[in-house]
Length: 445
Image (cartoon, rainbow, N blue to C red; front, side, top):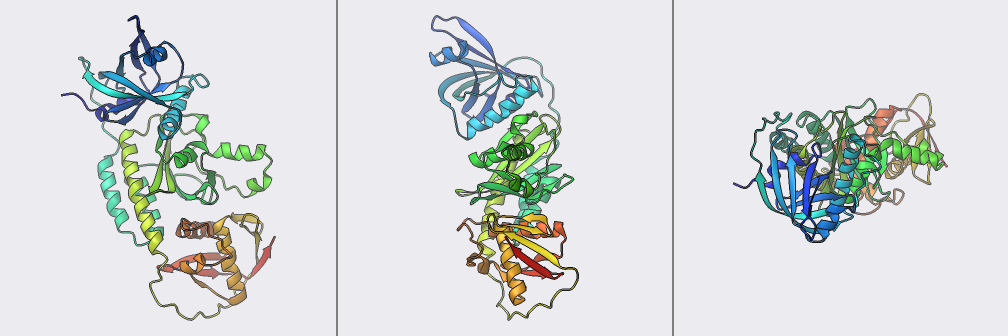
């Protein structure tokens, strides 16, 4: 029985280079090492095109192509017969291969030499196992299918977005066994992602941002495609690169409001999975490890399905969280708080908020907090609704895809971390309350 391509994906990790065989129009054979092969589907494979060499000339001239692959887990080998179809030089597949090749190059001391020029797409005509001995593969660290089943059951029991996001992070840690992870949400209006939750780091990094298209996380978001790297490469470092870039450009104001992204300084294995619902990018799941080749195709598959389930659930909660579940009641003015005054400064240029000269938050979440605090100081108001925020002209929500509920969760968590005497808490579907424990001085700049 001919093996299916998806059953030998462990041969495609780049640990043992493949051998590609072609011949020129005169029939002279040529054998070369292949840096990278990428699974596309059970009928197609993508091979890295890095140099215009003999192999490349032979392929373009119509040579038959044979490929020898070896599993680094079992030592089993396979001979594949391929037919060249086309070359892609941009898009999700190209970016996945480019990122993985960067890690392979760094691991093999070929950084600056290995540079992906294109992803050559081939049709797989035949797969033949090479006779010979092999060893048993090591057992997987996690049963991905069981982890996915248990996670789906847990997510289905969430009644609101805040619960859903917390359960999602908990599942990634406890069901899948990821020790270092981040959940980032998409801010479409500002073209960035902001950290909403993390696990395994000394600092949570809640509210930290990364531009779409920057680093592994940003490229995953831009291409809406999973990206997985098995070896450390500085080319796809996401936190230090962004901060160093701001410093080099002299953007001191940006640095003052830049919450450092959490992360391992020397992560070897990295994987980023987009969270998408329909045609909307909602966020990115990011996991990392200090170990080489810590994540495999099975974990990537499971996380893609998990992210799809999470995206649909997030979209559902964002559509239903606007509807109040009870009749509004008359508001009683809040009692004036006591204690040392708290100075809250607002900068309209980027909607940033500073509490006693310490940066808190910016963007839509900052505009929301400023509106809430003004209503509290001027009218004693403490209860609010999502619907009310959506029509509040002071907040300037970016439109239908505003991720309002996610921004409220972000604001709630940043306030809790800051512990400055201001808090918001959910009181029902589409309702929340503001608590202020110290007298406020509001300053607008």
